[in-house]
Length: 135
Length: 392
Image 1 (tube, rainbow over the protein chains, first blue to last red):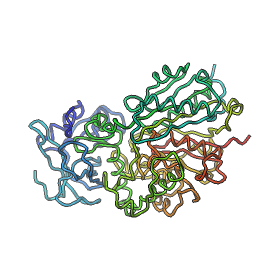
Image 2 (image 1 turned 45 degrees about the vertical axis):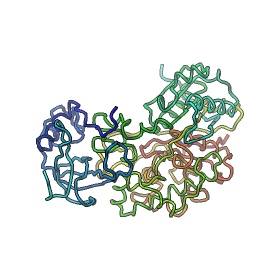
Image 3 (image 1 turned 60 degrees about the vertical axis):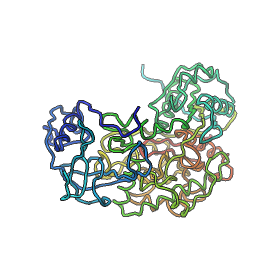
Image 4 (image 1 turned 180 degrees about the vertical axis):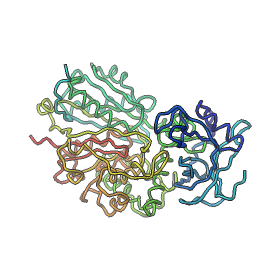
């Protein structure tokens, strides 16, 4: 087993999101019956069990609702300390991702998505201050 | 035929081994000692045991089938849950229900736990659960470096402190109180004093939580003998009555280490007042009737979250409520009087049940809660059991 940080697993309901990240798009599932976006992805809407779920490209903006800083190095090669942030998207769902800002995040801060290529075949959404996207 | 009328149920014996960070002992060896101690406490023998219940298994702990085989137990009702401490409540409740319905006469809850050598399970490359679809059950997403249960606990704690306007360091009151309790428990591991300055000198693990906010991963065993109250009254030790129970909660508004509606992970942002049938089942008006509280304190904030979830403190007031000795022996509501997962040992919760029995039997020595007649087990995930001294 490698001792470095793993890549995300490509479960069937996660492929659209992961492939979107490679194109620089935040692809999220949305229920066509109730109209609500949701996260994490799944085969049905968690509000009404509808299978009528499609995907849309989210604007990727929201506010920080919490964040933590890992001081312990759990995976070899991780640059400790590092920050993980929770962002409540303007569209509703809350994402947990890496923080890409230079300064610490603050709860309530406006933020926007950006994408980081981690291998040739994988990219991850991460968050930083709104207006400072670095692509 | 409907199910038969249920029987009243009691704890008839408890046992716990010596505790260590690294014992060099096998889980099976630890379980064997705990079982023998608990059976002796009750005045029973292995051939009396026909129910076996545990919340953990290999590689962390001994599996139910090996324990039954190795200890010569003629088991006809067994349960082993997903290996997580959180299932201590459901495992204990299953034992109670098995006895209540007559599926078992003497049900033993048993765990031999060896965290030494298994620490990787709790974060990093061994975080297999984090690769689960949708993430791990404590919020793990290892591809973002979000690994280890403490990551989710820290995320909830920052959210709570920001939402209600607290300095996160005020949580020090919880590990300080539990350390004082551990210092009155000769079997607890952490005997070194922990005062506020000591707490602040400890390193962050996942900020804003520091090392004393994390459970003490340990090696040890514990056993709890459950039988019908009528039978328990004829045994060696005074029975501890199981008076009320409610189950583990789950759903989109639940996160393991947060009250509903705190606003972490998939939770909504609206806190709500819940019904807690455990009190009425036990014949209590509410939390004001509880003499001592046992909380699954995998992380310090759990104590604050249980206080709010069960109504000991109002929304947003739990962190103020735990200050100034309120949760210490001699205070208004002593919590985790043996030192808890933070300062006694992480035995996946069973140490708490052993301590509950000791308190209700008046055997807790220096840390005995005066007039202790009712003790509540409660978790931030909503399950609870209320225990009472036998009032025959």
